[in-house]
Length: 363
Image (cartoon, rainbow, N blue to C red):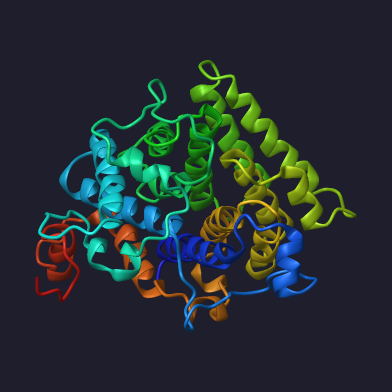
């Protein structure tokens, strides 16, 4: 298996691990977490019927990845925006009881991807409106992290031979702005998209350098328009500075960073990935154990570090009980092959991205 495929698998699987691990303690106080799991907090999954269950963070990223694959096959990068919207709306539709409607994503037939576990219910309201939000015309000026993983997915379709990196930044921004109109929040989407692209292209480089590249890209693209670009980058630089304090515990650092709003969750993920850049397990523990949005910081940390380390670096004990592991591996493999997607005689590809149904489905 090539390195790109392993990196994409690492990104999606890592995201799902952090999502599933952080969900049971999301928004709980540190005292509540210790009361439930002991003085060191949560050190692994809190399984439900033997499975680690995902939330809308993983679902959103998967649906957007699915829809952008359709875009890679049927259109060109200039049209990716409409396929991004298609994926967001398809996810919202999957959360409702509807029958007989045409679907465009084969993931709509995967039960775990349809389970309603939305971490930001206002998103469903926004995505069911006729007009979605834009940076210039927001629907809700929300600063919650609910849509950030959709921005990460926009980076997974990046093809340097067909796209400019600014297109990735614009897609990451749009992915969040459709439902969240706070400027620092949708600019966090751009930062995440640029970060994933930088990591996939240069995984051997220090994360501090790659995050600076992403911040520079956000500033170049949006700094003249939004003052919040400075605010976001200041938060991220603060998180990077905290990693240089040897006496500061991860819990104390997360308390300083707050990890409640979207921008704060991004800064928390930057801290967790840098303080444990070579140890996925330790990064996960640091990412979820705090009084903020544990599932969001966990999902972002898992995606960023998983993309850098690759699927082989993710401990098997995380993957063996992850309910959607095989589905995400399949999706990542399809993403890795999207640059040569003229697979006319591939029946499985035809079923998923032409007929829009999972392989083997008799519908």
